[in-house]
Amino acid sequence: MIEIKDLFIKFPGFALENINLSIQDGEFFMLLGPTGAGKTLILEAIAGIVPITGGRILVKEKEITRLPPEQRGTSIVYQDYALFPHLSVLKNITYGLRYHRNNPNTSKKRVAWLMEQLGLQPLVQRSIHNLSGGEKQRIALARALAVNPSVLLLDEPLSALDPNFREDIRDLLKKLHQEVETTFLMVTHDFAEAMFLGERMAVLNDGKIDQIGPVHEVFHKPATPFVAKFMGIKNVFHASFRNKKARVNNLELHLQSPPGENKCYVAIRPEDIIISKNGTSGNDINSFQGKVMGITDRGLYFEVSAGTGNVIFRVMLSKNDFFKLELQKNKDIHISIRSSAIHVF
Amino acid sequence: MVTKKKIDPFFWIAVFSTVTVVGFILFPLTEMVLQPSVQDLKDSISDPDVLSSIGLSIYTSGMAALISFLIGTPFAYLLARKNFFGKKLVESIIDLPIMIPHPVVGIAILGLAGKNHWLGQLMQQVGIQIMGTVTGIVTVLTFVGLPFYVNTVKAGFEAIPVRLENISRSLGASLSETFLRVTFRLAWRSMLVGIIMCSARAISEFGAVVIVAYHPMIAPVMIYERFTAYGIKYSQPVAVWLIGVSLMLFLLLRICSLPKENQT
Image (cartoon, rainbow over all chains, first blue to last red; front, side, top):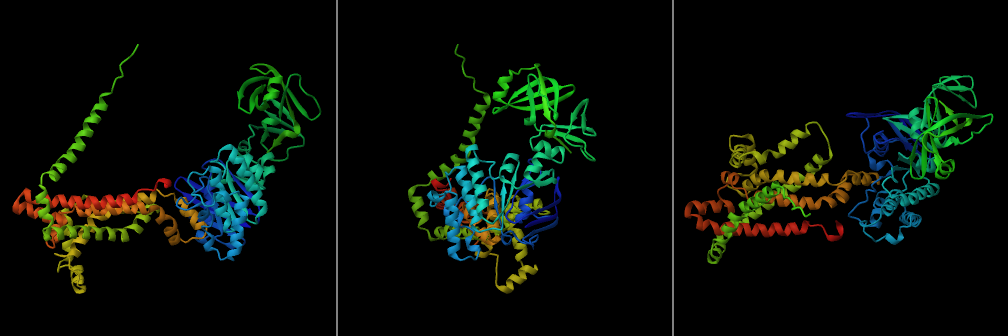
């Protein structure tokens, strides 16, 4: 278990404050946040690379706050691979073995197993120059796991990769995590990666944690407007509530259940809003007449701004649906939203 | 319609200044190298005084570079990796020897080594003498050469991503093991270049050495002596030999420091 208690790191112009995290043994935990939120700083604080101003860090109930990096049992993998340029592939992978008093046979087996899992055997004697990004990242992973760390820290390991390599490494990470006992803690700014890989996640916003929870819970039930927007929810509105109704400007939305106390926002995922020619009806469906205000081609899908009254919804439409509906600007449409798709917080 | 390509006047200014600068440096030097006859060169290199002065020049600059390597490397590493209060001040202190007039360096060192200073008295008791000794020459050469070593190697350390060291530490290597297995292995070329820079600076030093030790005579002092005693004709051949031998050495070190083709 990794426990971070009241972690506080101060730099000129930036501070990481009140970071409290507890990560289970063997968990795949994601730290999410935009650039500059302090994600990497948390990883490097756990690894012992950046000095911390206050707080405690425990790994497996052992306090490591004041230990030098080499005594922490935390391996780190960076976005830019950080392979040793003067060493061959094999020497990179086996770099740390001499510092871990294992039975040489066990280490050898582990390295062989890792190389097989990561498909590295054909590269063993190569120099690390002229390898692809995907190959380099697999070597970095093998090197980090070869020493059997209790925690593997992954600093945006997929961000620098081409899209096709990215999926490979992403799948490999998932597979490796299932096979080894190491706890994985990964930093990313991509919620799709977090959804695919993570079990739980924490969302970081400007040096503070906004929300911690299972990935699906954070995805579907964000706790702050920041988290909602970060999870790709493009429709976040201030709202007032009465019984099972929410009012956004002068638009009334029926909710599935009474909202409870102290709520001030509604959030609706752009893919949960339905646009149709004739409208849909049903008990639990909010339906409005509206107009297409704008259309943006996003490559894989269309984003349509659909206005009703003085509220504008952003809607995600597949290309297929888009052409079927023959949408164009200022066209009259129906906007439907299931009441179960409205998240209140 | 074909329009004539217009060349900006700045291009011609740049060409003119390039030719001027290169010519200004190379013209006097090549003339000096070409003026002595082959016989003059032969005569001067068979003179044991000339040989020993060139030898002493190379030895003392080499020692200065070695000392700079030993004491300058950890210092350069610290400057490259750590931020601390007063770092800017320390960085300007290391540049001081570059700015101080050379004879002043010699006078400053002598002032410490004299009988009236406690350090001089201490050194006398241990048997170290600065005035008129090889030790004295190496001391002033280290003084003037050290900044060139430290600045070069500091830049070399800075060019190595700190992440490589972080990775090494996290894999279990201590700070010193990391330095030996990663940093040193990646920075040795810049250390070699630093050694070249430092000894090049040292071998060309005259003003500080002539104050501390006229004898034993290093090559620049001998060149100066021949010039004042016998005139330009007799000083030139020694200068040519000094330049020739140093160029060969620097070229050799430079070749060693070139990266292998598959390691760019």
